[in-house]
Amino acid sequence: MPGGAAAAAGRNGAGGALPTYLEADFVFAPGVLGRGAYASVRQATRTLDGLAVAVKQADAGDDAAQRATRRELAALHRLIHPHVVQLLGTVDHVEGRGVWLVLELAEHGSLRALLG
Image (cartoon, rainbow, N blue to C red):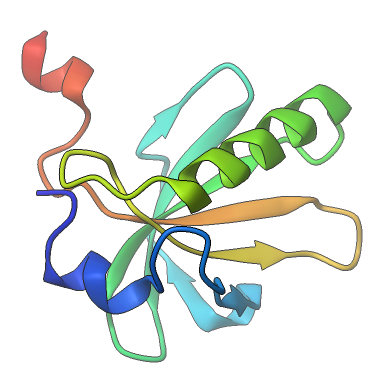
C-alpha cells in the first residue's frame, strides 16, 4: 500500500531534500510495468538496500514529456498522503536523457487494473 514503511524510509517530508541517484544504483527488471502518454514505468531494485521501486522514465527526446515529468516531480515532492505513491528520489542524467522519477512500488498494480 502506498505510504508504507518503505516509503517513509525513503522520503524527507514534503519539500525536503530528495536523493538523486545514478542509473547504476538500480537493477532493472525486464519489461515495462506500464506506459502512459509521455512516460513508461519499469520495476527496479535499488542496490543500496534491495528496495523494490518503480522508475518512471519520460521520453528523453520529447521536450513536452520532460516538462510534464518535471511538473509531476514538483507536485509529488510537495505531496505526502497515505493513498498516493511516494516520490523517493530522482535519477538525473547528465547525457541529456532527462529526469527519471524513483517512486514507491505499488505492489498490487495500478488502480485502473484493480478496478478493471
